[in-house]
Every structure is written in C-alpha cells, then in structure tokens.
Length: 213
Image (cartoon, rainbow, N blue to C red; front, side, top):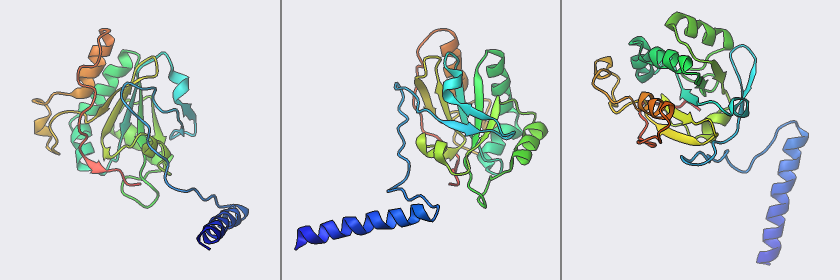
C-alpha cells in the first residue's frame, strides 16, 4: 500500500506540473542552485543590460571580468558611490582593459529595483563607469553566484576562472570615513592579476544590505 501511495503521489506532482505548463507557467522543483566556487570555472550566464543588449560571460573570455552587485538605496552602496570609491575602481579597471558588470538583482517592487532608464540615469548622475548595468529582475544570475549583499564582488580571470568573491574591503561599515584605512580587496586582487600573480586573498566575507530577491 505504501508503494502504491508513493506512485500516486508522484503522479499527482507530475500532473500538477503539466497543468501549470499548459497554463503558460513553468514549475521548478526548487531554486536555481549556486555553483560559483573560487578556483573553478565561473558559472556561465547571459543578462540583459539597461539598454536592452544581451551580455554573455563567454563574450569576455580572455579578459578579466568584475561582477558588482548593487542597490542604489542601500547605505553600504551609497558609502562607496557617494565617496567616489566605486567609480574610481571602475575607471581604473576600464583603463586596464577589465570588463566591469554592475548587476541589479532587486525584484520588481523591492528596494533597489530600477528600469533601464533609471539605471542609466544613476550611472550618469553618479559618474559611474561600468562596462554595463545588467538588470537581473528574476534573480537568476544573483542566485547562480549566491550573491548575498550589496555590494558583493566577484572577479573572473581571463581563463574564465573565478579568482575572488566577497566584500569590497575589510571595513564592514556604512561610514565613508572608513574607506581610506581599509584594504580594498578588489583593487588588490586586480593589481595582483595585472602583475601575473595569484590572488593572495581569494575569499572574504561580504557585507552590506541583503540582495532583495
């Protein structure tokens, strides 16, 4: 009887899934699993930017890529943009040929969600210099990389290997006054990569506001 009950239960689940698909809805048995690990190939993704262009991680093989999770309403993000710290990092990265992708995974109706036009206005008003701003409304890229905070930073080397993940620096506060005395993990990692050295601190604890999936 137990075996028959299990078979009936599985049949009910399958029928429910088929019904949802027939209605144009797609049922998945759980969230997208994160598989980003330092020292391993970075998870492949495709994302649409604020101007409607699609960016695939594979497009940038052969170049260093920085992924920056952002939420303009988060005080920790404002710390780094209000001080000009994030923009300085972006400009230096661009000068060194690094691709910088800012990613916004805030869901519609959640803090930090923006339209493409609003994202472009934020870039302009803050003097930011990312290669592109990806709008990850469904949180697919964020969950793939297990992005937890804004900011949460990742660096992928030219081979496609994830070589850094964690906080932007070692001062987990929202106070801009702490920036000058901080060790900027992103700047240090990029400098090491540029010099042909391995990243000496590949994983740190991220800090900031939670990503608003």
